[in-house]
Length: 336
Ligand SMILES: Nc1ncnc2c1ncn2[C@@H]1O[C@H](COP(=O)(O)OP(=O)(O)O)[C@@H](O)[C@H]1O
Ligand SMILES: [Mg+2]
Image 1 (cartoon, rainbow, N blue to C red):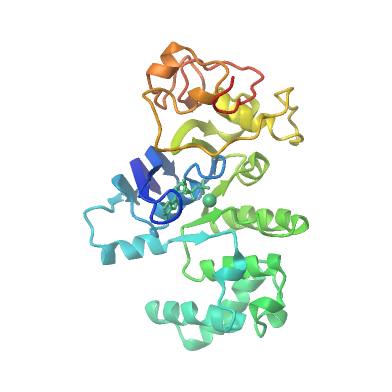
Image 2 (cartoon, rainbow, N blue to C red):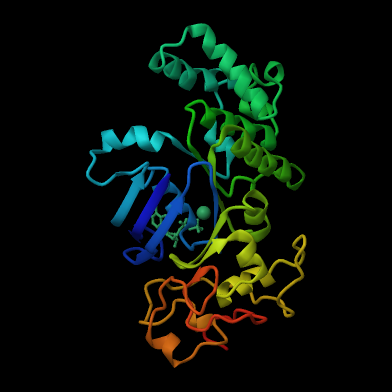
């Protein structure tokens, strides 16, 4: 079980036109992912999903807040002492090609972490090869075909399966799949999503899905939790099906209205969603982060930041002063 309390992260841009500017990537995020559970983080590009995923996997530091893994708070520990905890959380990112060393065969790629694992767990060297084959079969690959090959000799879908097999070499408690199917051929995506779902059921590994796509979020975790993130703030959180069938935050509603076809759900918004624009994160007044794009904003929304919580008897948590079901279209900044 991993929990985060009030996680914040600000980046200072180093180069480019934004040099020196601060980007508030995460603004006080709380999360909890149970052992064997499923959760999805969803939100548009730049909202902080990857940053949060990397913090959860121990690959990025946060500015304030506390991460607790299996009851142990991470902040009092020296980095070296945190490693065994974070090793049990494996990140799978979107590009399986760059994740694999092109000069190594799949056999070599799996061999290194498995040999280490064998030493740690006092298993014989013969276990290494057996386990490599077992893991490849588990992710739906033919070991005889894959083991002697190099990454470039495999399809994108196969490469992502190899990346997943490599993540499994350490017997992780959790897989963090960050847009893990976005660079894979559309026809192969469902297979990878199905695999992650299957691993969750068969190995009891929890899965955190990071995506900008609601259908994906729903596919992996229909019994899981959905976190809707907008500009570094969780604006709605609850059971996936609850939120999809009855979203209360206008941002969530606009996200859902952007999917023309979603199995089992009629399109909630009648009008097409207006494309989102790049946001100047350095500029933010006191009010709701979504206020400038929200057609339902009131004076209160502009003056005060709503915090995530249960209000007006909704089953999910949300950060909106006016949680109602409406046909929502997010308006571009400056207009509306
Ligand atoms: N290493 C970094 N240095 C500077 N800014 C960063 C860095 N990583 C992310 N950011 C900024 O933080 C914000 C959130 O980014 P990210 O977590 O990648 O969002 P998402 O994955 O939702 O697209 C963006 O504005 C991005 O430009
Ligand atoms: Mg990302």
